[in-house]
Amino acid sequence: MNLNLFYHFGNFVIWQAQIFKRPENGSMYYKETVRQMYDIGIGSLPIVFLISIFIGAVTAVQFYYQMAGSLIPAYYIGYIVRDMTIIELAPTITCLVLAGKVGSNMAAEIGGMRQKEHIDAMEIMGVNTSAYLILPKLIASLLMIPILVCAAALIGILGAYIASVPAGLFSSAEFIKGVRSFFIPYNVIMMLVKAFVFAYILTGVSCYQGYFVKGGSIELGQASTRAVVYSNILILLADYIIALILTA
Amino acid sequence: MIRAEKIFKNFGDQAVLKGIDFTFEAGKTNLVIGKSGSGKTVLLKILVGLFQPTSGNIWYSDINLVSADKESLRKLRMEVGMLFQGNALFDSMTIEENIRFPLDMFTTKTLKEKKDRVNYCLERVSLEGNNNKFPSEISGGMQKRVGIARAIVLNPKYLFCDEPNSGLDPQTSITIDELILNITKDNKITTIINTHDMNSVMEIGENICLLDKGKLAWQGSKDEVLISKNEVLHDFIFASPFLQKLIENSK
Image 1 (spheres, one colour):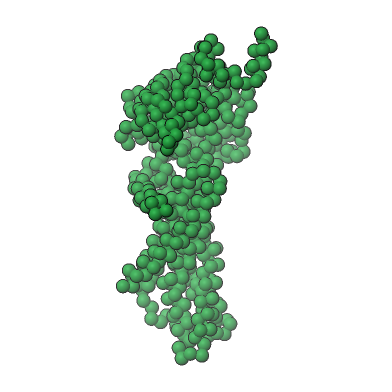
Image 2: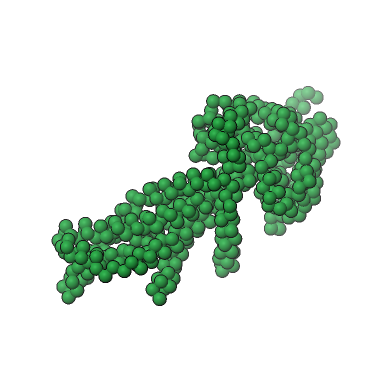
């Protein structure tokens, strides 16, 4: 089991060297990157919107429940929701969800190409398939996922407002005051660092699972599942490490 | 010309190829035949560089594929076209985009020049006017022809065909065989065809290599097939009950 882990880690590292080689034709890579940006960015917007709005809403309602009757001012809920969303919920939850949506899609797409001999066909033509199939996805993820995470943070805070203010939990002025209080710009940097690292993890792991798939449709399904599970585990592990490093 | 020199290939403890020595001649249709599991596909994948042999050399004229540097390998790849058993056409691209893919990737031609080349290749395989269809919208035989068109779009020196007739009716198989033969002759390329279709052997087998249990069991041309006393070849050719019945009746 451990040897297998080392084998895959080593193989993954060596494979990265193939991915970052000079493209055969820049315009083909550019077109593919734009397509991937659309798929990842626009394609994931509805699910990110839905998840974020509910997470923001539930966070606000739960904090109101916990703080009700305490001496902590009500506007603190806006402050807590904002920081929780920016530091943790937006990057982590969004990327966990994207590992399921985008990651499994990438593993299935590339794995399907492997099984239908599309990758072999490209290799014989002389295409560096590691670069052509993975690099555009990686660039698109690194560009679009941080944007999605920023959107998720904003939508989460909006969700908190929509869920609590009309329900009369606290006033609009109190919430806005909370959101504007004690703002530390460094937290946004922390969010973006997480977004970049998680984007790399979910794309790299998912593409690796698809690219090296062997067998038939059952193995492809298993690879797709592994892509999601391993991405999620590594994202959570990376979340902890980043939190340790950036808050030290 | 491609020369396979003492090719051995093992998968774990299992020896699949056991010292294949064979010369695939230029300007001819070279057939690799044999029963399922005889090592045909593995040999083909070694010849195109998808598998590394356990030992041995593959000479493309004076370049050794096994030890070639990356630049030579890259140039060599541009001279190779391959038709896959399952066609390997990109499902999300139209026929034109499929055929144009190598041109888009490796040439600096204008769009018009690329389209002209695609149209020429489509005409060559008698599929003119089908540019905007998707692979799922055409028949298996047409997909094979699109695969051939894509394989020849860069004017390759070497054409590999893995089971070009699998899943096709006899008449379509003959059309595909004739097409491959004509392309080989017209472009003077080295064509290597992996098949177990006896019609293809008798139709286009100019240089035949029979594999049996990973070894070269017989070599010769289609004219020598019927007069050969080689037992493995005899068993392979006359395995069909239809042929056996035909021989009995003729006797």
